[in-house]
Amino acid sequence: MTNRSAEPSASRETLRTARSLLRRALLWFATLDFWVVFGGFVLLGVVTMRTERFESYAVVCFLLAGIVPVVLQTVDGDEDTHGYAYEIDHGERLRYVVSTLGWSVTPWGIVTQVLQFGGQLVTMVRYQRRYPNRERHVPSTTPSLPYDGRWTVVNGGVTEETSHSWMLVAQRYAYDFVVTDEDGATHTGDGTELEEYYAFGEPIRAPASGVVVKARDRLRDHPRPGSGWLEWRTWDVRGNHVVVRHADGEYSLLGHLRRGSVVVSPGDRVERGEKVGDCGNSGHSGEPHLHYQLQDHPNFWTAASLVPQFRDAAVTREDDRRDDHEFYRSVGRETPVAYLWAGDRVTNTGDTGSTGPGAS
Image (cartoon, rainbow, N blue to C red):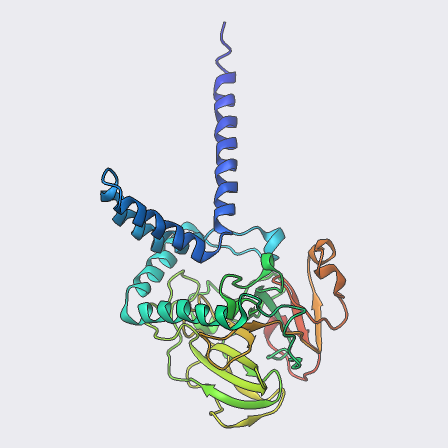
């Protein structure tokens, strides 16, 4: 006699196993290089186009080449690997994908993609794929944290698995910073207004002395933070930004600044800690935050990211991932640290300011 009560249980277990395998496959797929995924579908499209039986599917492959890499960016990463957990619902994912794809087919979006792809090729030729890392092309500039008080790193690291955007050489060692309260929230209320975000309007400072070579201040702050929508109309993904030359081949880029807040101009000399603008939500920014990167060239598209070693930085975490990570466990927790990782709460110990609920 068949045990009918056991059949539904077995079916549920099979379904859970299938979902788990699918989830693992999706996470693995999401770790692939953007250009590998893009190129794979383009190649598949070319092959199907030349195959009489499947040529009608070529257009589908080309569409997937543009859509799949964008969708994969919304896949929740492994918190143990990346260090910081992002909370995003299916509605936000859909809005992100739609707005990104909408932007990608605009004239300015197409130009940006061409610049990004072409810039990568230029950088590849310059370095013959031996890009800067912790041992190669180490910068002489030791930047301070470009803010007052304590902020949280939500994206970035100096290893491949913890990187901000490993496949984009210009942003490989970039960082995204926000201000959080003791519960880890980045805003008060429901987060639908820019002014509800702790980071919005906070002063952003020069990480080291140098000369301003670029400054942009006219782009609006995207008025729909935390919704998943991106500013598809923007003609500069960096938003309002400042680029400071510290030394030959060493430049700081500070992005997503608040419209009308930039107080420096090209040619100005700035000292370490001097205010250059306020944190905003301009360009491609999901919520008010600071994008910071150290690069080897003033041109964002053809630059290679350099590994920043921050000074006057004290880090705390709510987990033990630094102790478990092969590289980060070698970096102190309660003492000034050189290398940062997503999930770190980092205090600028060299300033006298404070900021919001995250100040220490």
